[in-house]
Image (cartoon, rainbow, N blue to C red; front, side, top):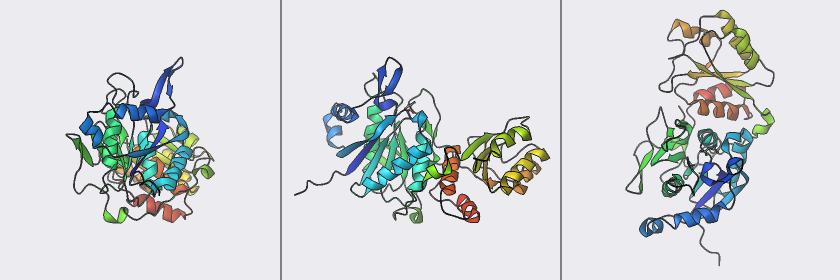
Length: 347
Ligand code: ASP
């Protein structure tokens, strides 16, 4: 007889929450499963008893997430695909520095997910005095046990955010993440996980697996670049990054509601990139709100260079979506159409 399957799976990838002091500073520590189980046993008995049971695995070499690359996002999605069928929900323990990037990438790779995938981390190591690590893992476990949650979400400091809408906003404070253009999916209230009605993914976006596990490594180490305009930026400076042969796409962070300097040479570089088949998408440098390309005369150049509107997406969502679409066997027209479509609640 097989023992009944554990309902949840915790995947440890590294990050501050599992780190230990070394002579070189904080570094990812090992043996995280016994350390975590021991910490959970220190919770008040009723709270401990109401937590769902879980199995635990770790990635082969847990890292500081500041070193994560698209290949890590790909490996993590593959690991989730391998295991997800046996579990009712997945929790990813991850460093906070690039947590929103991993969450965004997972959302595009795990399209149609029919169960909770909750990513979390902590600003302090599990064993540090006053650490937020145990509370974040506890909250993530509670949300990952809710079958109504069918998307990649980010849990931090009592709040559940849509993963592909989240951003790290604080370097020190415990409530380090925000979701600037989308309301909270849920909150922990009196230690109970509460999902707000009507905020989950639309029915056609969830509940029927259509994972897209592309091979990001075929694109080269850094196929998409991130370019924020600054006053006085020259066409030569823009071209140096954008027209590089290894670059297949770019995120352009423009002014306000969708503007760029009235400089024909800048627009010429964008048009040349487009002519070379690169996928260029724009969002605002303002953290809140969306862009409308062409509303001002100062945005018309973006239109003529066929720059795609990223609407109100986060930089993380645009970059991971461009990489994802570039890795799909699709025509340029389909890539552009998919970019403008709301696939997983990202826009
Ligand atoms: N550098 C760490 C990481 O992202 C920071 C953290 O986890 O808070 O792995």
